[in-house]
Length: 349
Image (cartoon, rainbow, N blue to C red; front, top):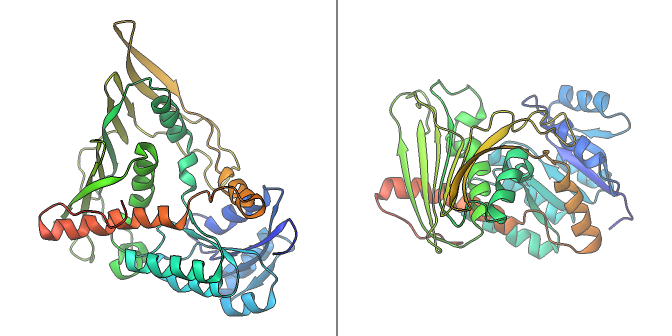
């Protein structure tokens, strides 16, 4: 490995959400990291990267970049179906790899990626940086301090009623299914919040309205943990009546959060402002207290700071490939369970 700052590249500078520029800015905000290259197969996107990130090298071919640019770390933010081959290609070239969520399309692909990382003796990490959203940070703080007692029930719901967008995310072969859009965030939040092994996963998929697309309109995963916690995660594009983003019940209270303002400044800010508030009901001194709790700051850059510390100082991987595989396992088993009609035991609990 070269001396610090570690030389980083981003594969994928597509037009959706400005992810390429966002990753480069987060990388460059960390003292021990520097974004030195961007690769995008579209020459126009590569040219835009050079304009927005002066001084970087740009490429339209991954193999050419790996062969001709000195790199330590590669971040992959391309469509889901490309993650497995690109990650393996970069790992075999001796690079550490960060792969965006969703990690890949299924557990078999995740296993291949993990095996390639072990064979190359390189780190494979999954970019679940939204663990650091301001609302989720506030929720974790409340739960960790026991302010609502022991959590036993979680509901996490998003979506609406509307035709899917005509893009790769809406094609099951490319994106993995409707649940693979927002579901990786939601499942990762739940697994991180509960912090216990899973016991069973039950899935429910509905295909009722948008028949021109080859994926479900409504997906729900019910996760039973070994400690008895039950979590329901729902993504829907046929949800005519909405619910709060979060509803969490504990033995001494609960949390309700709309999520409004949770990601103010995402992709533009290094550290996002506290953009909203949640409701907490708790028992204190024998009386119920109904409180409004402001969100914390959204510390999105901490993912890359933790990655640098891992590579240079041996601290834990910010989100390991094994953790990313657990998320993929839930998404995959949700579909399997919806077809079988019964609960499924997780391969990686």
